[in-house]
Length: 514
Image: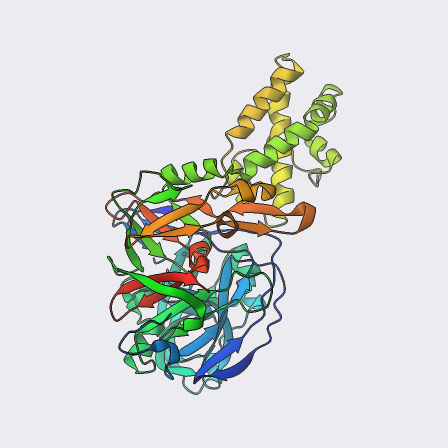
């Protein structure tokens, strides 16, 4: 696919146990599958790839609406309920095989393949913590065997193609090609509460050219209209995470009329977007137009660094690592200096203060090579690890300055300056949870209409009480022309605006979510 560079495809590191209560409720001829939602305590990210040479995002080698009738009341619509994890990832259940084997999947408009773990996955630990497809137990299984791999920023899932029936709600798609994953590297898939990915993008980006499940739902006449729609429930109370409706929309999930824009490049659900406003004022960068993608598999909003920097400055956001570093210097800087002056072993200082668990075998100098790599590579508590890394860096910096006989004030000022310049590993930023009321609104111009996001809608709150942390919903992603500048409108946007993916008319529609 050409030379690749990293882009932000944001997902959660799911760390809580899942206890789904599944039931079907008929409603105007549509089946609703109820699921439970739970909160998370932490966030992590999964990166995807972009083909910079061809300008393609790549995961290959991460009122009433009328369309030839009122789809809101159609008996040929199929509804699948979605689970909401901390307003940052939504997924639901499907079945594969006869009898049906159940899997929890992310419904991802930013990819096009269906994959689930295989019973032949022997050497990846992640497979032992998820449901696995057993071809020998399905009477409708057909062997394919063609190798397949999907590349993510943290590694690739790989395996082989098979064919079987796929159940979505009460719909059964026959002879569907999908990937049996035999390798799932990395902590992301190990800790995730989803088993696999259900791609809803176009066949143009499908690995192996496999026909997407959605295409077969349309081709096999299982839906009345070639339309599917997302409603993501952002309300904290209750257990319903939202719904994806195949073959129509639910008029109870939105207000007013949808604004439709044409798909400009098949592969992703890509369309043209206009200016981005902060506090009602133009940012200028997209006034002459930018491309955008509606992506249900991305948690945040990703856009050009030029605008993201303006937005994060306006909302008072700072890098996660930078903030942790400055907190260490402010609260413990003098203590670290005193311990260094008293000739305490530098490698033991952070463990003495309580930020690190010192194992007696490694020193500070061997660990501070790449801040980003260090933070990303951690597999335990993210906040604790960030504090430990920040403390160890501060010790090294202070030790170097002490050797030059600089004053306490000079040393602390110097370390603070270095903290300011620390990049966050995946571009994430934090904001003051108590300052939401004073933050500006951020707006996107789509189809000549302005779509507003309030601070409560573009900030993700992680944790509760004194340990709560608020994450900016904006992260940087720079895609060069001709494909860029590009925005990825993920769940932060789709949670505020009910989204319709109209395959028949090749349009994407947005309306205020109910």
